[in-house]
Image (tube, rainbow, N blue to C red; front, side, top):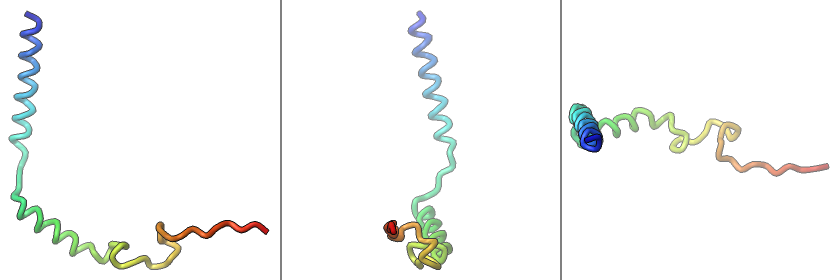
Length: 70
């Protein structure tokens, strides 16, 4: 009897999860892609990998200078 109750609780949990997922607002892929392209075009001037860095000092990818001992 306890196993039947446990199985029933499990099935109710699955049903609730499916209801939550079904209620999620969806958008067409074509609209999502347009939004992504628009965002990228609006922010490309801030992308350091596209326009470079203002100085070598702020570049986290610069080659590190080796330490020299006197």
